[in-house]
Image 1 (cartoon, rainbow, N blue to C red):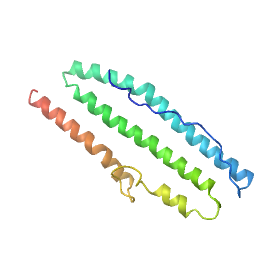
Image 2: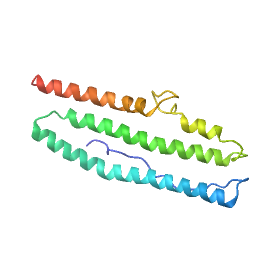
Image 3: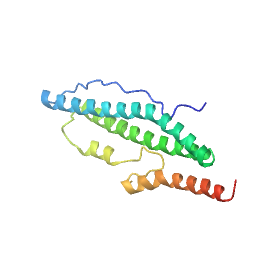
Image 4: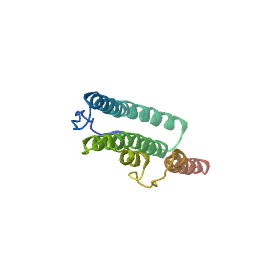
Length: 158
């Protein structure tokens, strides 16, 4: 039995306490962090529940179509990569906010948090100037190669 489609722990909300902020600013920042965590946890839960079910249906369909099991394996790998990237993006965003809020002067300059949020260098294979097209190409390249290999094998009767 393969591992579950997506396994990661939900993230708990721990309000940030920061000096140098007005109560309104701190409440707003904590509310934004809470919403990010809720969104992240929803993504985790939905993917945990739906991912296996979708892949099970794909397995039945590929068998009925006479396609090799590698179709589902390739789909699992690529879909899992996309979900991991989405969760990692939310984690990096929350960590940047939390770190900045805990800094000695969180309102002094926004350049540090902007630098962190504009950089995708924390993702393997991504440059610090990665744009959405680069991310898409990075994610979809292996997916397309896998499909070409699978359908090439089908055409050769393998």
